Image (cartoon, rainbow, N blue to C red; front, side, top):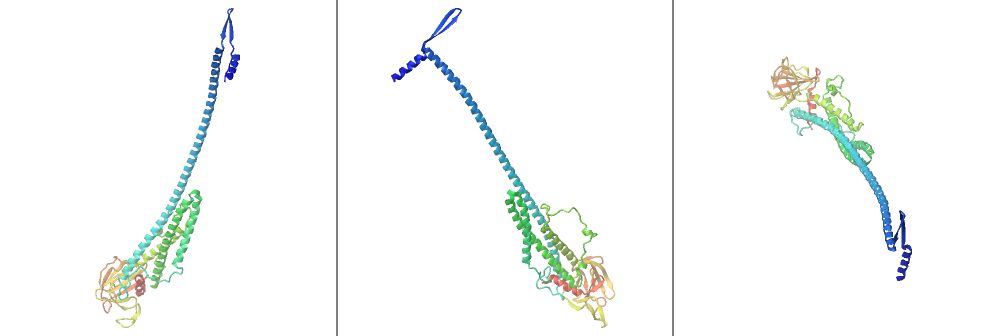
Length: 438
């Protein structure tokens, strides 16, 4: 240890010898003597200063690098944040677009559903009104009962099925309609799947809409089926009287004021941009309901009832008969019903009284114009209860049964004229039974 310290002293002695610094000024020489201790102290001070300068320089350089590094880090963080914000904004825009797509598809689907519902609701309401009117007519006709006044024992209903069953089973027809509805719904879903990410939600929504669509279409088919069946039944009732149903309804004409309609064509399924089977089916059903309504309105003015609602007895038919007074063969243009004196004689359909008074051979007589060429005549009455021009409904009392005119006893002579030609009233009364009897 002492050897090392001695060596250190020798090194310091060589490096820091006593030195003198000479300085001459104005011819005078001065010198400064610097001892080894002073040199060591001065060296320490200089070395410290150099170290401080080096430290400060290095510190400045490193601080600048740190600042640059931190600035770079800040820029990286800002870039990453901006990217994340852009990603978040893009995600938000995607979600917003997805929601907008689903909302738009939902609105379109709901609009289609409501459009179909409005069509179906209108059709059902119109059909229900017609059924109610037919039922009222059936109830009114049932009041007269059978030919001799017998009341129906099985109740009454709107219409008896006088036609053979349909060739295609109803279940098969409904299955076909289900397939058509499913096919149309599939086409709607295929267009919806083009929405990409919205496909699953829209597909689920369209599936529910397709199920509802199938039910709506089957309800529509049921309305059409019933309307078509009732049209056939009513036509058969009219045909059984010998009258062509086409002669009682007004065909569609351009100059028909009742058909004066207009406005721009707007496809019911405008949101989908294409015509659907549903609306074509709805048009067909509407045509059937319109035809049924026209036929029902005509039926209201067809004399299908008996002129007596009380118990009566059929005494003379239509056509050639032996005259009750002369005994000779003669033509009889009506039918005769005997009943108690002053029994109420009633109108056999709605119409307007065109004559109320006395005529030769008929005694006290009332004639009612029912429209569509139908006129009914009620003769031999004891008293007349209506006046000319008066509107009457089914079973409005027009007079009292009597024995006036050329008659052999209390009865009512009843005629039906179609386009001024006498037709057999019995066929109309019998046809009226189909309307209420089951």
